[in-house]
Structures are given as C-alpha cells and as structure tokens.
Image 1 (spheres, rainbow, N blue to C red):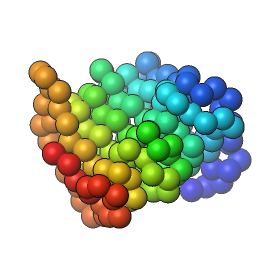
Image 2 (cartoon, rainbow, N blue to C red):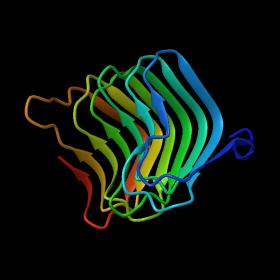
Image 3 (cartoon, one colour):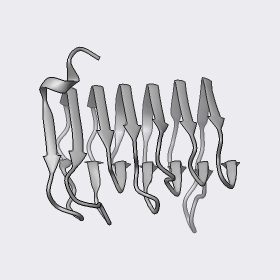
Image 4 (tube, rainbow, N blue to C red):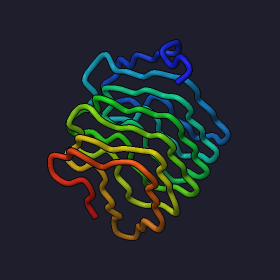
Length: 168
C-alpha cells in the first residue's frame, strides 16, 4: 500500500453502491472506503465491465465489498484488504467473471456471512489470499442455470470460520 490513507471515502448511505463500474478500462489505486452508518445493502464496488483494476485498497464496514456482475472480465485486483464486514454481509460476490485475478486479497475481522461467494464464473484465480473468520469463508453455490467452471487458489488460508471454511 502506497499511502491508501490519503484517499478516503466515508459513506453516509446504508444501502447505496459506491462505485458502479459499468464502463471498461477503469483503474482505482490506493483508496480507503469506510461507512459512517451501519450498512444493510449495496456494494462498495459493483463491477459490470471489462478491464477493471483495483490496486491497493482497504475497505471496512461493508455490506458487500465487491460484486462482479454480468460482463465482468479481465479483472485485476492487487493488495485489497477487506475488514469489519457486517454480520449479514459478504466481502466478495462473483456472479460473472472471466479472466479474473485477485493477488494478495485479505478478508478478515467481523463475523461476515461469507468472505468469498462464487455463484457463476468462467475462471478466477486467488494468489496469496486469505479468507478468515466468517461464518463460511468460501462458498461455491451456483444457482439454476449457473456454473462455476474454473477457480484456482494459490497460496493462502481459509481459517477460523464459525461454520465452514469451504462450502460447495
């Protein structure tokens, strides 16, 4: 992290999405997002575009840290720490993803419902990433007509869940 403290976003809405990334080729660097009110819905990053990059981020108090939705492809996230996600929340929800990489993603603190929830995707890789202390740290749960085709976890931990570390 190169001074992510210098770019702070304090969210005053309990339900709104913060960054709606619907156009391709967006890069965000060195940011901190926190909420001044208890979050009950919405994502800090709602991505429905290709070529999104997030480098150096710290998020706290989220209901959903990031949602990758329809059209998400070529996603590159490096050095994201998600902390203090609310009890009913999830750090990362993947509803669509093709060529997505999370390098040094760390999710812990707070008793989130899940750290990583994979519903539908083409391929995703997690490198040096950890999901700790949620009710379920990693949930792979495709719905009707959905598939999780390829996921790869390279070096990291799923630990200290209150229910399960990996649920399929």
